Image 1 (tube, rainbow, N blue to C red):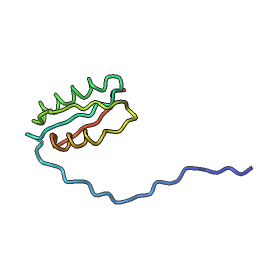
Image 2 (tube, helix red, strand yellow):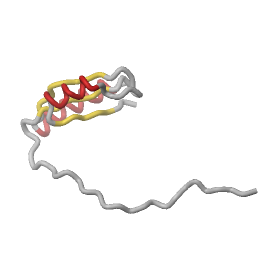
Image 3 (cartoon, rainbow, N blue to C red):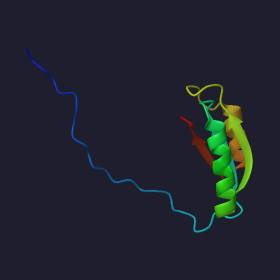
Image 4 (cartoon, one colour):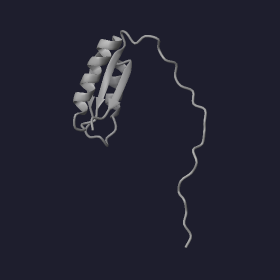
Length: 92
């Protein structure tokens, strides 16, 4: 019998991160809620915390049809037009 090990060693690679803003005040925050249990509650509280702690302005919460569905193109266009920052989260 021959057994194959499907695992592989991690491969190091260089990743360049986007520059971080020094200040988040005044940025518009959108939230993408995926319909999982408590996702809306978690994101609403996160939005309030981000507003209080970092001066972000929550402007929109988009609700996906289900956790497995992607955000549709119309919603992506609205998120781009109305928000500077988007947080997509779960609530499990």
